[in-house]
Length: 188
Image (cartoon, rainbow, N blue to C red; front, side, top):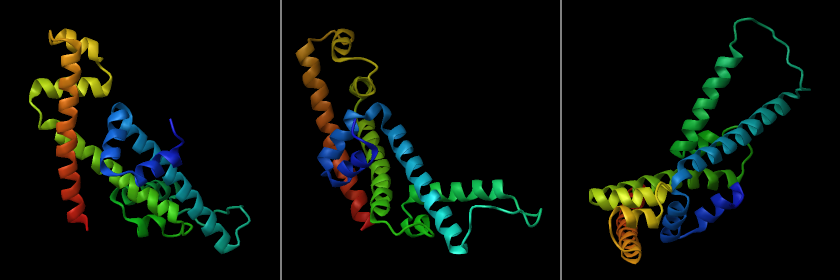
C-alpha cells in the first residue's frame, strides 16, 4: 500500500470516480485507515503545539509543579478529544491553533473529512440495492466471499455472477456520485 501521506494525497487529487474505486479497493478496512491517518495527524499537530508552546516560553524542557490544583492528565485528555473532534469536523482553524501553519495539515484535515463523507455516501448507495445484491456486494467488498463462492451460493454461472456484481457496483457508483455531488453543493 502507499505510504500514509501519499495515500491521502492521491485521494485528495483524485476525481470522484477514482475516489469511489479507492474506497471499493480498501472497503474492508477503509474506516480503520481513516482513523489511523487521523491519529497520526493528531499526534503530529499535538507535538507541534507542545513544541511551539514550550519555545514561546523559552522552556528548557524541565517542568516544575508550582501548585497542586492543576490536572495535567485531565487537561491533556480534553485537549486530545477536542483536537480529534476538530479534525473530524474539518474545523481547520481551531485544529491548527498553536501549531505550525502548514498547508499540508489543512489539506489532510479537509481530505480526511471528505474520505469519511465519501465512504458514508457509498454505504448509503449500497443500501439502495435489493437485499440479495446488497449482501453479495457487501460480502465481495469485505472479502467475506469471493466471486466463485458467491456464484456457487447463488447457483449461477461464474461469468453471470461477475457481470451481476459489476452491474451492482456501477449502480452504487452512480448513486454515490449523486450523493457526493449533492453534499458538496450544500458545503459550497
